[in-house]
Length: 482
Image (cartoon, rainbow, N blue to C red; front, side, top):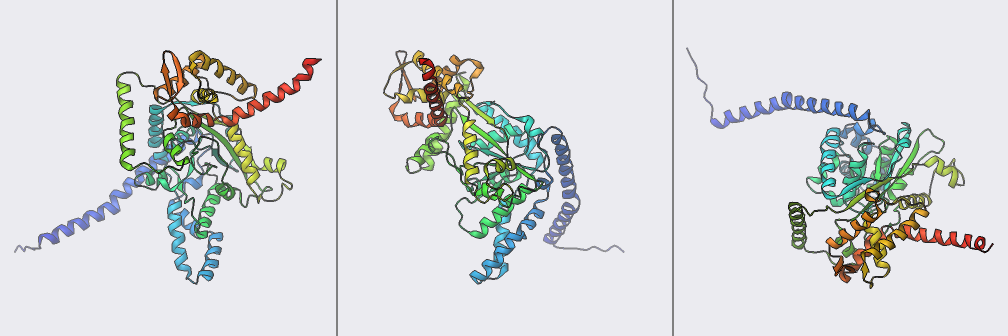
């Protein structure tokens, strides 16, 4: 005797849905996770054979584990106890805040995304916008660093492209972990940055609990050997000049450092410069305290810029945006620095201001000297003058001689100085910053501030070169009389 069981359609759909979810959770998702984990391990083994700085185990630790470690960090717990008594709240309330901060800060590094997708995307993007050049890099020094070193790349901050450019050029050396401002906490950029190993910083937060959680994470990462990338200036340069160092992150990294211990901290100065900073006019508006443009105006400017580049590419007249160059300087070992500069090199560093100033000086010394900066420096010296191209070239050649005598190295495209000046003039003429009439060049007075912005990128080098030349002249003058 056959029996039939009848059930409502909604019940059957619900049963099928629950069964599908069970299969997904217990069979399909574990298989997918296993596949991607296996692929990631293959990538890690592959890149570790060619990286100067191998990926540390801390960077590969599961995010949930790092969040728990950060939440129960001894210094964080100590502050929680103190604040609970001061604010008359329970520890659970403060611990919930700590977990929120930890989830916000701790990255979720994905080797597959970093070395495959992100590297490919960064390479395509920077090469579509700039002619990218690596000026010089002390790779031998990186290759000889031991596992007991915490490496920190310190960079000047010219553009938001710095993140992408440095990620691309450093990918053959290591996987960098960035401190990124709140501007990037938008979907999907936030998730992408976190998967690439970046961590977010509330730069103006006055909450002592947040600052302690951030400090604890930075110290955990440094002790775990994670190569970090820090912009000491803290924000983009508004006027093109090299700024002064903010001491926050640098202080966190060096706090508790034991000069007599096994671990050392190694700082790598990095100098970045561009023939064109995409945000230059926006940064200048901020420097001049002008109100931000309306979003509609910004969108129109963006699409006009994109359309101009597309039409130039179609017509074969697109020169991209000139050169983008990065120089990696010589490593600065904290133990050696303390031995040379500290009164007692066996004691922890309590004031990082001298170290910060020294590192910023070294970043300034290796700032790339590019064609647009050279031309801008020459023409802004006499802004009212009308130049011939030959006069600009002669002045740039003289400036280059001063800079090279002072020990600075300029990036000269194709090794041809004449061509380098032509590139600088062309880039400024295409933007109508320099006006051409009857073969003569003059400054568009509306854009004089823009020329100063690019001249400022190497102003500290020009000043030093002039000082050195003056000192040499003073020193040689008595010899000339003899």
